[in-house]
Amino acid sequence: MGPEWVAIIALVALFVIGSLLPLNMGALAYVAAWLVGMYALDLDEKEILAGISGDLVLTLIGVTYLFAIARNNGTVDLIVETAVKSVGGRVALIPWVMFGVTALLTAIGAASPAACAIIGPIALGFAGRYNISPLMMGMFVVHGAQGGGFSPISIYGTITNSVMEENGLPVSEMTVFLASLIVNLIMATILFFALGGRRLMAQRIEPDEEVDGGLHADGSSGGTPVSTRGQGTDTLMGTQKASGVRLEQVLTLLAFVGTALTALVFDKNIGFVAITAAVILAMLSGNQHKGAVNQIAWPTVLLVAGVSTYAAILTQAGSPEFVGRWAAGLGAVAIGALVLCYVGGVVSAFASSTALLPVIVPIAIPLIVDGGIHPAMFVAALAVSSTIVDVSPFSTNGALMLANRPDTISEPAYYRQIIRYSVIVVVAGPLLVWAALVLPGWGA
Image (cartoon, rainbow, N blue to C red):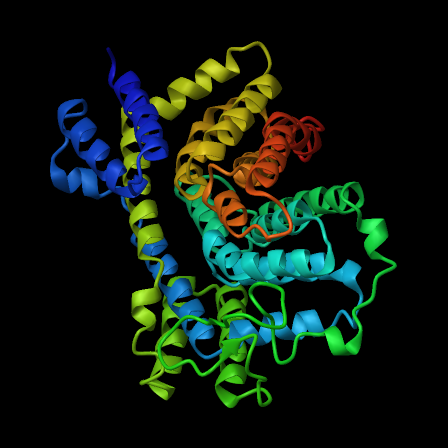
């Protein structure tokens, strides 16, 4: 058996074990990289570890550190509260506010599950309070997270763009970002009208019904307040009215804008810029943010570090070229591209999208090189196909929406709704994304 087959079998085993057992797939990937690297490729440990992207790891640490500070000082609460107040009592706009806020959070560096964990309970609380379809609200949050998830400074976007650059592909940050945003907006629009959006247009929230000073996690005017995360935070979501915008919140918003501009306009490393901004904010309010480092997405860092290391092992074993040649040999390059879109979608429905992205993009290189497919559009199709399926209850985002169901619907009924929707997305999503982004041959 050749090393390319050994690496592929180990990859399949990695995803199967990571899906069935509560283990961090990054840790599993390190084990697989070590075993395959040493015993199938005859590499030493230094050569195995050479595959990790320090730039990518620093970016993950920097942007999630900055986001942790934004949670600690109430900037995230401020964004959510301001967005909801902006609807002016129009119930039909609440799902779109949830979509927009979640998209904003992932676009500025929040991990997709973290954004869903923050906004999901709030959105589903509103669903219970104002008789909005829980499926609509839950899926709006997930699609919002994925819609913003490929911005140039986001986790997904950083991973995808780094993998493209490392593999010699022309990077088109805005193509991937806009493709994901537009696809998820379309899916949200379909959900809105299919699940009672027209009925909501006639509903208004009376002034005395509005939640005072923020949002209640359960959508009611009473109950136990849910504290925002972090050390020294003095905001309780749903019980205390914010006394205006504080200076540290203004500085945090400026830090996000400055980070984005510095990275994009002046072409500076986003990881260094984000961690510098986070350190400056932490220095200004040391006691409040002393626990922010603990809130860095360390599981995600481990996940990406491990999987990117194994992705390098896959490349050295020749697995991407092997799979790419097989897909290209199906008779048409476009059919091979469709197969890879489905591979990304089906695997990601049961495993981590973050872990899949560094693996699926290199596999597509032979098709891009030999078949004349536009690199950015093909990568966008793979990225979107691998993330829209996170509505699945077997993925973290879908599971969060299931766990926070409102009391107005039974768990079995809600679970069946999510399952049915997930099946539709997994079956039809990659095909439609492929038809829109790859089949027309844009720029080829």
